Amino acid sequence: MGVNFKEAFTYFLQDKTWKYKYVILALVGFVLNLAAVEHIGFITIPFSLFVSGFYILLTHNLINENKPVLPDFDLEKIFINALKYIGAIIIYSMGFVAIVVGLLIIQSLLAVVVRVAGVSVFVPFMLILSILGLVLILGLSIFYLLISLLIRLSFSENLSFKQALDIKRLIKIFNSNLAQYVLLFVLWGVISISTSLIYQNAPIFDNKPVLILTLLVIAFTNTFIAFAFTHLITQAYKQSLAKLENNESKLESLKHKPNNFDYKAIGAMVLISIIFLTAFSSMPVSKDSSLGKMFIQMKQMKYQKHGIHHTHP
Image (cartoon, rainbow, N blue to C red; front, side, top):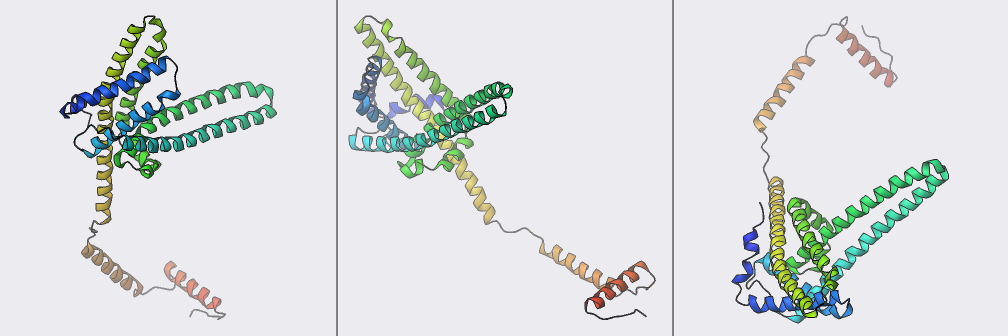
């Protein structure tokens, strides 16, 4: 099941308040764009929290199908949820940094061991080890960025800090719809890189009015894209939830499923086995036959065990 691009680019038009909310978000985005170009950092913190909190609440409404879909500008609710989400991101970031530092320590220890072993082995081994370490760290970084999207989605579902920290659930959700998450992640990466390139080349606009107009166009375009992307990633997330719920239902039904054993057939097999063993045990066995000799040896071993000397007649 794919995502519906048409719905993603039109859903917010059904909200009667979309125009003024769209303009306000775009203007906030313009302030952030201008601050990025002018290299002003600390002033943007409240604006960044506002945008982050708004999209968290928008995602919450989309997942739970709340109406109206665009959240109100409840500043308390926006900033509290933005801070809770950032807290979850910080915890995951600490874990990610710990893993990277651990890998670097292991790499350093292996380098020391190989250097002691011999210089001729050291150079090629270090080259291979450096390449492997770079690939592994790059892979972990990409995985972390993907997971960060899911952290936002998982937190936004119920606005739950605890649920956002459930890494096992996040991995299950990620695996259940891997292709779509990767596709949307690439799309998001292309948009982010394109925007960054524009910011880096902003000094080419010597004329301030031209620069401001360009940043305004970028802000309004990015807000429109953010509305659409939030809907697309939410669609993928809801599909993951449906798949997980379906899998859990199947497991639950298997637990309560009655056994389909044919007890009559099993009873008949047991009865036949008893009859066969009874008939076999009552058969006359010659003492000169191999089977008879085996029985005699078994009896002698039994008597010897109890200290009784017995000679078979």
